[in-house]
Image (tube, rainbow, N blue to C red; front, side, top):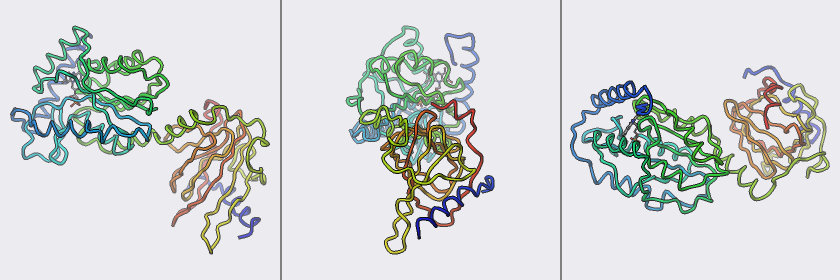
Amino acid sequence: MKKAAVLLMCMALASAAAGCSGSGERNTPNAAAVQAQMTEGRESAGDELTVSGNSRDAETALQNTDRVQNGKDLASGESGVLIVYFSVPEDVDISGVDAVAGASIVVRDGEKMGNTEYVAELIRETTGGDMFRIETVDSYPLDHDPLVDQAADEQDEDARPQLASHIENLDQYETILLGYPNWWGDLPMPLYSFLEEYDFGGKTVIPFVTHGGSGASGTIDTISELEPEAQIYEDALVISRNDVADSAKTVTDWAKGLALQERSQEALLQETAVLETTAASSAELPFPLGQKIESDSFTGNAYIEMMIANDETYHFPQTNHLTFEPGARSSWHSHGGMVLLITGGKGFYQEEGKQPISLVPGMIITIPAEVKHWHGAKADSWFSHIAVEVPGENTSNEWCEPVDEETYRKLV
Ligand SMILES: Cc1cc2nc3c(=O)[nH]c(=O)nc-3n(C[C@H](O)[C@H](O)[C@H](O)COP(=O)(O)O)c2cc1C
């Protein structure tokens, strides 16, 4: 296809903006209420599981521990994501049970797991991060009453239980997902030992919590106090133990929404390459400006330069270079699959329902087909990227509303 014709096609697509058709809180006055919630939760869970009170299945417990500690899980750190969790699966008989929630366990494919442990596994399956289980030198009782008594005593004494497991390669992780159960309206005391052992300064900590009715209580604030230099993610995952067994979709959606791959990419690039990428003029960008895009589907001036035309001999993908002046951006839109290779300046990419991602040269964004999104420059810099089209079958271009000016101005 001739360059001019392709250009015309791009313009036509861009201008076809036809609208988007296409606390058990022993320290608070609520102690009695929370204890009642917990007791109620245990009773109903007990009904479901037919708890017999037998002694713990030691073999299963050992397998659980091995799975996390044998080095397979706490691996290379390549993903930049570490999933840390603390979990105490209580002693219940699981014989004859395939998959059901218990007082403090989930049974998955005949395997017994703590509630928080199960959520951690789901997160790992979604994000591909490495796994680390917080363990104590003195293990906790697995019968409920002695367990809650010990936890209460530890809290009264402000104890710091000695940890049996330690992270060797913390430097390799930018993002720490931190999972724990609510214990007496607070972090379990081993979490205090853990958070005091490590400095997560410069890292993002993303909490996930399981509970028996009190939610996360004040634990997120406590993590912020113990890790003042870390960025604590506000939209923590908080799941009642009654919902844990059926939480796969909730957990997966939440974990996907964290956009961890892009976070690690951005952190890695900021470390290694381009800390200051502001482009004060288009002359600082590596590719020519191309032609101005005349379209209502862009705010501010954007330019397009065709790089590679799709051809029927070698099937090269249609590839264009786009440049945005400071503040310029596309409207919300969707199309077939596309890969953005960031070449200059500073910009944003945002998918509907997700946080915007800051873009710097070297980053790669894969846009799935039919996902509504926008991209463009930051307010103080020119911005450019290569767009490789991977349209797929039965996909269409849909142009929607502009990115709201007030929302855009608040982005940094
Ligand atoms: C010692 C102890 C104290 C607890 N305290 C609370 C509490 O204050 N509020 C609450 O909502 N749930 C409380 N729970 C319930 C747990 O938070 C809940 O069962 C959790 O899902 C257990 O996670 P795990 O199986 O990963 O250990 C407590 C449980 C235990 C064992």
